[in-house]
Image (tube, rainbow, N blue to C red; front, side):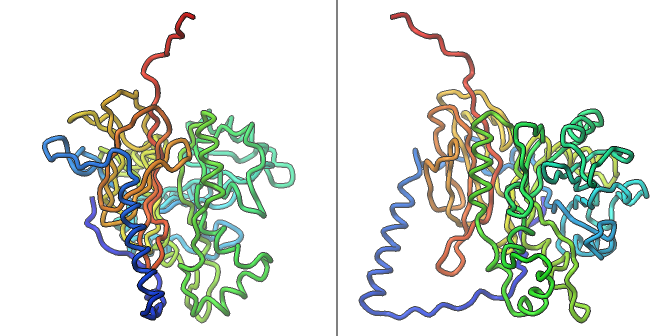
Length: 417
């Protein structure tokens, strides 16, 4: 596991002036009381004694691999980016892996471009256009020769190909106004992008053809962090799918194109965007430096949902953990399905002091401050975690975990009346 290091991208946050006085005293008092209330809302708050297990997932044998998903290069018609630039940015950001997804092509894979580039493993998938929206495909070996009316493949055919080839499919930017996913009944995808950075960047300019002009003129002095928002609509969709029994792994999509350049400087450069959003993968296996076993490790962790998203511009999230524990025994980690039992506890470990929010079935059931919190899991449900980092006077979304699924260990018998 890498050591923690801040990977901020933007300049310093804008200063906010505070004017003392009666109003200021009231404000400070309110913040203090709110903080106390926040601390008291976490159910069954207690600290785990050291003798009752490790204090982090690293102690349970898990390694944290940081990477980015959904990257375009010159193999896509809307990106001039080079593979060498992707590799350079990945190494500068100390990433472990990058998943490249050029539009409707596996040309980079066919040309043998997958492999280790310095400290970063570059793997090649594709962003496939279907009649119902876009899918990110990983592990797909071929889809050439398929009939694609209007350049788009029927999603049923893509899902069939993915199943036959053992590939993973993730719905890309599912709630983007200009190109959402339109048919959840037919979808047999492994997961979805619960956050897509490109969607937030495009939201600032509704007219796509003016986007490059906007970036060139305004973003030279605009802190890009101001464009980041919590994906409330996509999170609501994700929670609804999970509650309905759809096991969908949540990932973050950078959607990097590196297409806006001004006097040789990349406004939306790979290095800049790679520092904003990451998807961390957890595995008890170690990367070896060999393509095939390491590729299998990355895709296995992704398929299991042993993953969490982080907004790296608020700090390095490496070291985050969310697990279920009974006594000194680990029952499961984020992404796992675990049999519920009365003495089961959910443990959250953040890399540093932050606001921790616990949700069950999409509803917030507790929150508290600290680098570490635990709660007794009083009943089955779908539990996930959101971590917020204080930036100035605001709390900004920093970490999004995949859920732990606590299910009934045995069917309940109906009583006689």
